[in-house]
Image (cartoon, rainbow, N blue to C red; front, side, top):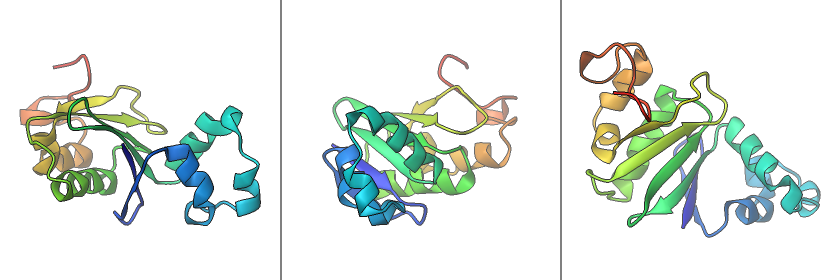
Length: 144
């Protein structure tokens, strides 16, 4: 299962991110003619471009975990992640991976859903050097 989250927070469930983009080209700022010409060779580039334009790609399920591919770790993006987790009633103890596609940080953020459901993640976005619990750096995969 997957979802797209628009900049304004609207959630679009889908079975295949690429096919959803092609079928809803105008929603993503593409012409239907252009989208119809997209093939599997353009899949990753198309998905990356959509994310760079501000969309959040959500992949996973309650059993295996969830990943958010985001343009950057901004306050608005983290608010949309928080809103998604709350609306879908995600388990607060489940692990969440947030991966920036275009941001400065190249290391994914790996935390519990609880971290994103509280204002902890928003505090990190406001002051990335502060990090969680007053530490000097934000927690990232492989770092404490």
